[in-house]
Length: 285
Image 1: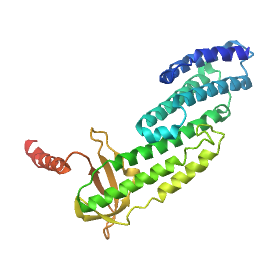
Image 2 (image 1 turned 90 degrees about the vertical axis):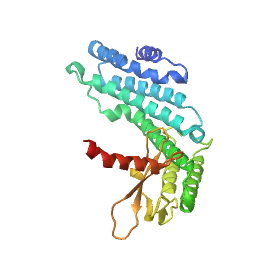
Image 3 (image 1 turned 45 degrees about the vertical axis):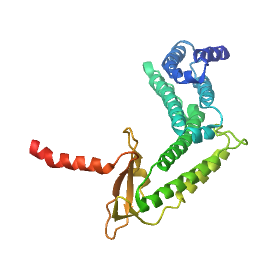
Image 4 (image 1 turned 30 degrees about the vertical axis):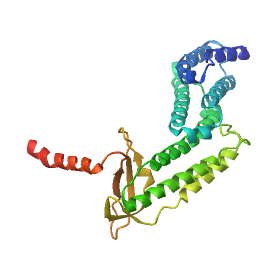
């Protein structure tokens, strides 16, 4: 009977083209509603050990569909189009979250708890989700470095800084190519080869050489000594400017230096406009 029920659930989670995979999330609440009904009405299934087997099989179905959705050669795709791959990986993690949310919604419903430790059910799905998260971090790192490579920074000092960014991008690309191998599958959670490569990747990023200190091209009086990575970001406006936060190298100064790099526009015009607003708003108010 369990086998027939799983067959029904595999039919209930339709298998289709990659573009249909995100739609699978719409089926999670109905599935757990159905499982809850069986738990309440069928004594055969109303046992933790049988429920564990059932939900684990559902987890395996989701993992299989996710692997099909992401596809093979994931790191080649990151190099070709990192933003598209980021979208697919984030979508996959959202689907997994919705599945776990649906489980949490129904496990204690009607006052009849499923007395099961969460890790017993989701250990494999959690590991897969963590692997997707690691690959997503790699994709985002590559995307940010590739955007830096396209920025044009003016002046002699700016050219030196721009070349540094290009060198960082090339080193990041080299490290990502180390993930490309026919000897392992990065989405296979039982394969530890990815973990070894991921540790090497993070170590390589930490060792990227940035000049010990340099003058910012927009104001040579400002001397900085490196990025505060966790505070840097790409802003959401059309030109995708960089919000960069540097460590201040000036003597006795602890405040970071915040700048913006933008391709195609003169930020000095933006600065003049903001100064105009700053001066005249008090008069108009």
